[in-house]
Image (cartoon, rainbow, N blue to C red):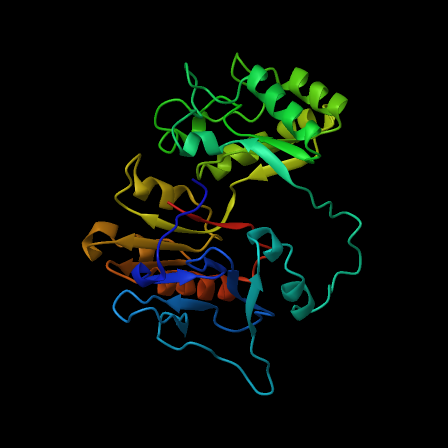
Length: 322
């Protein structure tokens, strides 16, 4: 399943966009927002104990303040879209028209595309990132996905789990990842050539697992290899910031905190203050947040830390949670 479904009456709280269908199946709707700039994002407080009423609420920052700003400023648009079919809700021209125009001087380097990939099978247990009988990233499987993409007009195929390092506890063994060596059942050169032959872009996946130094040591050789094979699309997990639970199911949360570069903001999410052993005072750009804590407030605390760091860093990637 790519989504969950249920009656509105059982919702607790939910981020937008929220897609709904009437009981008779004749109307579909989406609640969302647009032009969200320097303002708290909206979430919908569920109707679990309040009948079938959804209430718009703003996500507060760590200190409880929801919005800081100076007048004049504009608030985001709140949008409700209605359609006879679910497919009529996309693409969202309403959202496009309500958002500000593009501010980039040049966009010729941006190539939007739809893609499929060997990754969802891992999340539902049908495949594994690691080697073995259920290994997803095999040459044969990649060719099958490329054939599907070519036949259905999709631009690319993402392959996760192609490179060695996934076996065992891949979070604790983050130094074991290679970004040039593929598993024996995956021929990177052959797959790249086949994708090029079919007119499909092969998307390389680089999982760092928090081992940033290991990744940086291999960047030059890895990118040289990808360039030689004509591969110019990359998905990587080099975090802009991180929320780390010290009690990880795999590996040590403390090791992840220590190995994260000092410039990356980190929130230590812990049930007991004593568990951190004062890591939040030893490591820069680190805060300790004790459980229980609202996920919305947790993310806003991280956003606040990112905002403070932007004066010292040129850019950010994705936010990681461990």
